[in-house]
Length: 324
Image 1 (cartoon, one colour):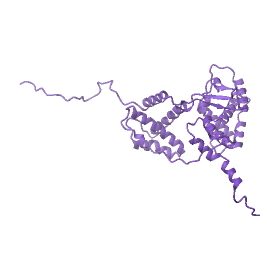
Image 2 (cartoon, helix red, strand yellow):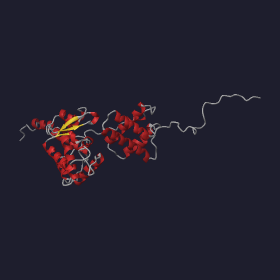
Image 3 (cartoon, one colour):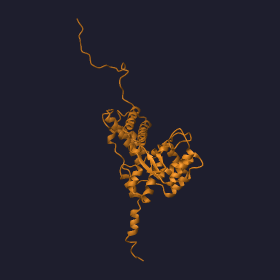
Image 4 (spheres, one colour):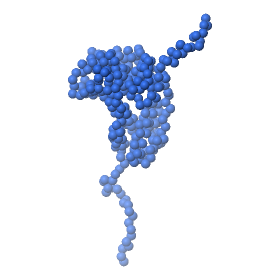
């Protein structure tokens, strides 16, 4: 009797004999290709750095809960439980939480666009309602106190003093400041060349005599190095954003400044406030700060302009009455 010729099932019971079978990419793999895409899209180094930091914090949040973040299989509930929830429990500022949520959304949007995932699970994450008008700035006295803290008899002290002067004078971002080279300084026109700047847009930012004098003193002490970066370490290497943030924070503690975050970005807000209060117009401030729209500048004007206060003083009905 001959053997029956039956058709076999078209699948195997094991994948052990398939060493090259494609597996799901890891979080680290997908983060790498996402950041590479950001570079190809010519996003600013600060934006890319912020995305990287925020997404690493998201992965860390999963790890702290003994969970593995697999972007290809993670659910919306997972993100809410292991990412959003811990941030709220740690009472992080709404702006901080929203920044990380936006990074998460950008990441998963990229994954969907390039077919790494079938669904963008982060799309339904909702941003927190952040309180408005919470822009904190230094007072005049606080700025003076901060500027007195660096020991200008040392190279690092002179460098840090110069950094704070430039931040206050120009309002540029810390990433833009640390990317400055000697060639970016035009003492004849008294301008800094910020290139590429946020969003890849170059701009020229003016500075005045006092700032020019401080810069020239620092550059003289800096001397010649192998790199063209303006602000360097004692080892003549480039500085990192975190190290400058920490040093400025330390100066704030030395000056016993409270009630305001002592950070490079607070110098940016403080410059904007002083510019508006000294009579500067919003259009030139927008160009100096490198904002793509007037929205943020209008916020500065609304918060810091003396015009309404001064007009009320001049035309107050009660003040103009002869009540005595």
